[in-house]
Length: 420
Image (tube, rainbow, N blue to C red):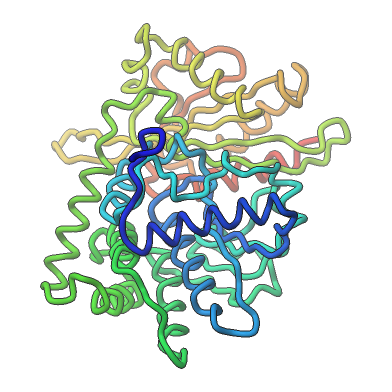
């Protein structure tokens, strides 16, 4: 019988994930949180981040099971449970992996039985995947390992392994390390095909079907494929098919509300400032694959004010001081060719950590940083309805295709860190 409408998953991977979650909660209740390692990705919670965390947690536990130092490890998804389905490709991949409905097999941020700041000091440590440094709430936890394909920020200098490598998918780094260690064991542990296929999906979607993959992405995908239930199929055809299924799911966002779009790929953290009055400011970034005009049409009243009201309700709920929505969409140029256009929507609040005067000054500081940024000055211009915007709101458009969150976030955080 389903419990609360949840259908229990089938297969070894689902059973392991559910049992691990249960064991952690039992141990926490008994005061044994110190025995646990959290493997965690970034707050965006994309398929790469989720898969890398699940893969390494599974490997760490199974590879040490018959040793004198067995590890207790669990993947912590740093997104709320109800936000997981805001990435349809994740839902599809987990369904294919025969996981329980409602993601009840997985430990998500809102299911932690204790505040992360406290838990960080109690657990054995954290392992970062697809993320170069922990967010503020986990900063007191020892960093045991890092696997990432972004820029090294210097966190966890003593972490082992500590791997930063430019590959399309972070899951490539994790899966390669897993295979290397697995094949060096006296006896290999069981690797469930559901997890292997999840790994292939993460690598495929991040590398655009391996078309934009590095040699390591391709080699690792082939090694995983040989162990999967698909091993007798044509590799290229299967990757192409898998990529198309996940890509189609990823694009299926038309039914999502503005609040859904703001939440589905949102990352935030506290940023230190030199200001003695306000030593930290909470800065949040949403990445949305729709123009602001398209999003406005999704609001109840189809109006600009309504979009900002929805955005304000969401950022108030999570205590954001500076919110930035990074929108992207495609338009046709005069020759009929599609080109990518990006938007930066800036909004500064005065009701969380900062007062009106500080908010005004902080808005001017971030505004200036964006306007003067060399990375963003490719056709940077004010949005066509900028004169309708409210206080401490601004929207720009630009045509630097590569200037997404990885470029914009450091520009804004650097400005905040220098604000007094």
